[in-house]
Image (tube, rainbow, N blue to C red; front, side):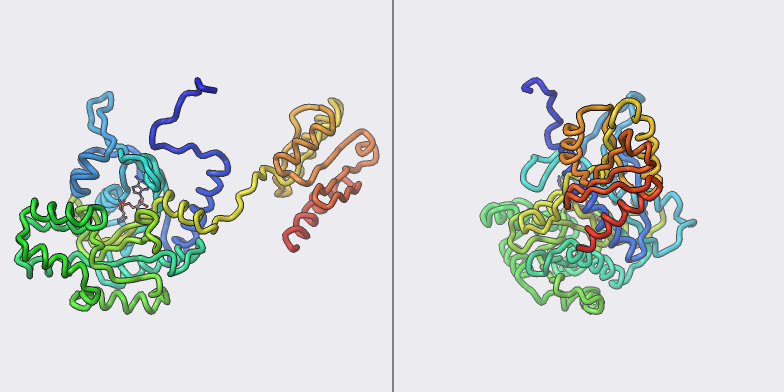
Amino acid sequence: MNNVVKSVKGTRDFYPEDMALRTWLYEHMRHVSESFGYQEWEAPILETFELYAAKSGEELVEKQSYVFEDRGGDKITLRPELTPSLARLVAARQNQLTYPLRWWSFGPFWRYERPQKGRSREFFQWNIDMIGERSPAGDAELAAIAATFLKRVGLKPTEAQILVNNRRLMDSQLAALEIGAGLRTDVIRLIDRRDKLSAEKWEAYAEDIGLSNPQIDGVKQLLGDETLWEKSDELPAFFKAVDAYGVSDFIKFAPHIIRGLDYYTGTVMEAWDTAGDFRALFGGGRYDDLVSAVGGQPVSAVGFAVGDVVISLLLEQLGRLPEFGNTTAEVFITIFNEETQAGTLALSQELRAAGLKVATYPYADKLGKQFKYADRIGANIVVVLGPDEIIKGEVSVKDMLSGDQQNIARPDTAKHIAKILESRNAS
Ligand code: HAM
């Protein structure tokens, strides 16, 4: 065992039960996306380095991206996020697409981060974005989608909150503190680190980037002002729309939410567990300049991305995950002996054609062993097609849960099994 080759640090293996959880999340993401009229799309996993250099921000591009030179000498990046790819696809067909464009996607991403609770180097993200709508109604639609998703996976407003702020609002407030435009990217990074650094380190960082003491006090005051949103040109309309969706209990103004990525221009949002046990559940916002930054015409956009790791940890901690059983097939057919084998395989195909999930033993063996295997794979309807049944044109069907065993005319097998499954679902 000790010699088994190790997986790459920060990656996860998806054994079937882990895969069942991922698929469960995916199904909820798909359901919510489609219920708001979004279409699924996908981009390549390999992108040019240049794509991210456009605007993702120094930390993601320089420190966290997997970058390598391919055999042709091109600088390639394993995608650390999807938004630049989305901007690239939109820019490439800008005049053929219908706006507002509503797209969603689910797939793997890579970031060279220190693996820890809620953070891995390979993770999955659900991305959902609306392109071509500039009003706060667009931001509110995305916030409503996020809240609908939280609710759908079983979270309550007391357990998870979507925190919202607006970069334009913060920009005008920083300007009022006489913080020059050249310094604001650094100040945004400073605000983004408020919860990541101790108070002393945060202040030292603020001084380092060149803020004066009154400016530091001014920034602190902004971060504590819960009514600051009233001064925004956009947030009052945003909160009104969110209210109309009936999801305002999930959504709250939070002046310290600013987002680490450079491309955000307006409303920004992050979801957090209220107990503060984990890192952000998801993040996103408005990015009106990204499509033009990758060569397209300017077009507004807003969206967010939910990672699979943190939401799974939170749902697990709260006991909200369903039991992912070990069931592989609903029906198991034994192989009585070598002579009956061909007929049994034909029967298995008939049952599959009738819509059942069917597994057979691969060869004739002791019946007890085959029943045991059926039990272990969770197939609790076992069909036996022995020589006696073949002569009578019947099959024997055993319901392993009730213990009930009956001989059924072979053509009625699928119907009989469907009835057993139905009565189980009903009870
Ligand atoms: P982000 O905040 O960098 O935003 O990532 C979004 C989410 O992806 C995070 O909240 C987290 O759930 C998950 N995530 C990120 N890094 C990791 C990691 N190392 N391990 C596990 N999960 C991780 C973006 O990626 C933006 N492109 C989102 C967006 C879409 N903005 C507009 N549209």
